[in-house]
Length: 313
Image (tube, rainbow, N blue to C red; front, side, top):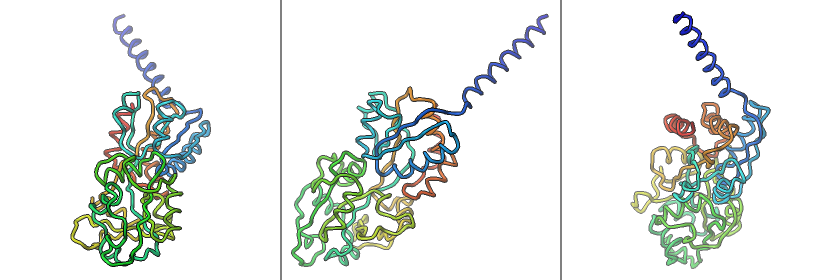
């Protein structure tokens, strides 16, 4: 009798375990909404399209608007997932936000491709102190002071007006300041800032990886990436001159390029099963292949993906 009872108990446990597994593997359904960082937007759209094909009972809505909007929307519950291209703030964590590291990339300084001192910039690069003098101290006002020759043209400095990860990353690079401390004419969004530099021969700004390089890998027409003289030897070394996407990727991977940053999904700890399923898909091998195919951000390592998935449980 005892043997029979033990056998029945084992069977019930087995069946119960099977029901739990079935619940976990149940096909997700409903709507997953995302908003936020321009840098993450192209990849998130591609993830969403593939996720919907795989799970037709789910609808994924993605909108851009800057990292600040993504964080605020996630905290207030307006969206399931906020796309945030900067490190999370402790105050955001206190409001019940779970940040999930999903991508990484960098921010690049750009000038008009007809800038009067472009040849000098490509030969010498610009040292970090000069970027600080421009964007933080405001003591550099002429291109002469950077290029070392007289053209007597003022630097037209552009920055972002919307709360965003690109500005946060650029502020950190130029002295660990806040976005609000950056000087320059405020322009909304990555597309707007890029267009401002395209239209201004003496303009300079900064843009996300996904807006500097085309899908084919070249730098977008109308601008050039300014070399950052990271080793401060007074010259733009070959590995500091970035003329295409692959060169930029290599510089980021090797740690040569300094203005890098992590990208996150913000979600509430009590997020819907569909939202969590979407993030698990983004961090899967299939999702990683999509990152490479889109080419606007860099995938994180397998070890990092596994760690994030564990935290998501």
